[in-house]
Length: 102
Image 1 (spheres, rainbow, N blue to C red):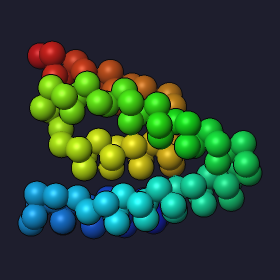
Image 2 (cartoon, rainbow, N blue to C red):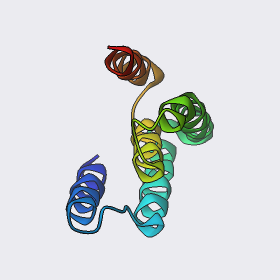
Image 3 (cartoon, rainbow, N blue to C red):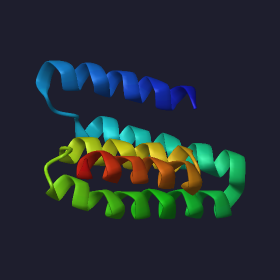
């Protein structure tokens, strides 16, 4: 999990100065998250982490289409979903939708 915090800090600094999040950071986050899930949950945990990231990415596409977030932000949230469980990110998604509607 400490690697996730490092990735997030690096993404924040890069986003502040360049208004972009590099795909290399996203790829490193995905790879580290997959390794983390494999170490903590084996092959089942790895598959579940990839599935959760894909579902969360697909759920955030409407938020991107409304213009609330950029593409890099959506990919970064998907990286975070690899590390967590679906319940945490389901509530996060609901908060995003409520904030966008309001």
